[in-house]
Image (cartoon, one colour):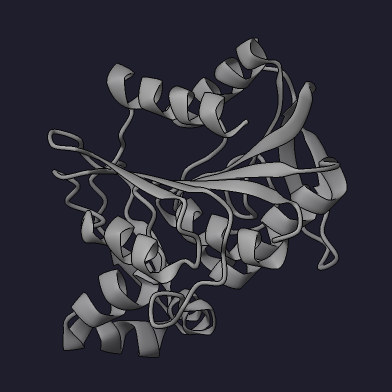
Length: 248
């Protein structure tokens, strides 16, 4: 039976669900993707791996996701970053390794920037900074943009769910406050980036662009020629495991 999550409360009053596995430092914190939750394949794989390696580990749900409070459509990049920071500050002591998948890669970069003194390394899995601008707004047709402006929400078909994504205009607008790839990203810790060349959701060039923008010279990108956006094959997960062994 799945164990019940614990909760923290953010300064804005959101109840954020999390699971923590006790172990040695650094603590690995996993930031999941858009509309994902902490019961996903990579989140659970990391829990198992960290347990085997004796590392402390935290997985959590952003507000509007999984077991946390709030409505998904009310979420923004800023709010979800703040959720991740609240977990980091309230649940974890000492150094951390930030692992972010897809949107979680953007959130994870923002967390790393905000807590540079604590972050020992950053790992991005198909990381997608700036996606609200480049992969949503700039790709939307004029009619979709008008729907967002007039109705506040666009129902976007999803390849991963029978239910469409409820994309809010607030998400698009707030994303502009957190754009990263148009400037130097002041992160100088080790960075490991994983991306599938068959990723049809987040182009693999995103990992290259992140590598170019971060200050750190200790950056390694691992491309999987046959990998898709999920990067959840046994081989992909083993590469992630090896990265944790190296970085911890």
